[in-house]
Length: 226
Image (cartoon, rainbow, N blue to C red; front, side, top):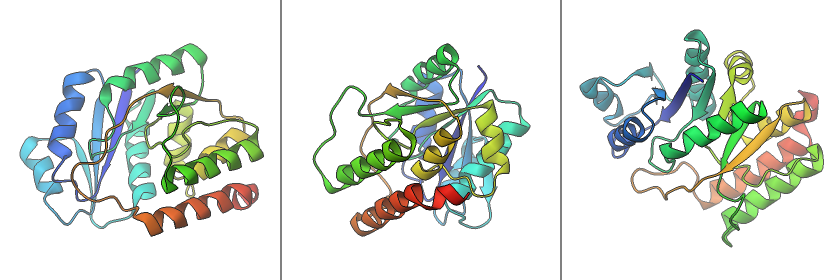
């Protein structure tokens, strides 16, 4: 399957070059497009200096808009599947092939790179929030997703088109719940992820708690009126 890695990047000058180098070394069969989401650091300069394939958004639009730009690129260039892949080095490219193989074998529309199919979650406030979202998805769809907040997700051609064209689709657990309720088949593949070593996550503790609560409310109520 012709596969594209969509790499949203906002102020990732410290990790971007290493991320692309590792992707090319460990998953050379996977194409990529970086979506520079209005970075104020040297992310754009690094893309230009290294001849990276990238889309350049003039202002910071956020993850959902940046990811949609990548999905539009995937649709335009005829990719069979596209994987959401972090620029900060947390995601490991050697797992992409296993995700693609699972999609080919099962015919599912979405494959999640999951940290918790075979391993237990650590005890922390963030993991408690993830467990809450997991429970909300199970309650509203009947489907157990072990790692609903994983940002490493593979989408098939049909999902590429939907994410490229739908205005209110974001790469978030509430959209995942909506898609499951409307017939999307989702599989999970065990992966390992690294901790972020450079840059700064947009989710601090307060924002993480707010995110988990908003996502749970969206799954329980908002998605029913889409």
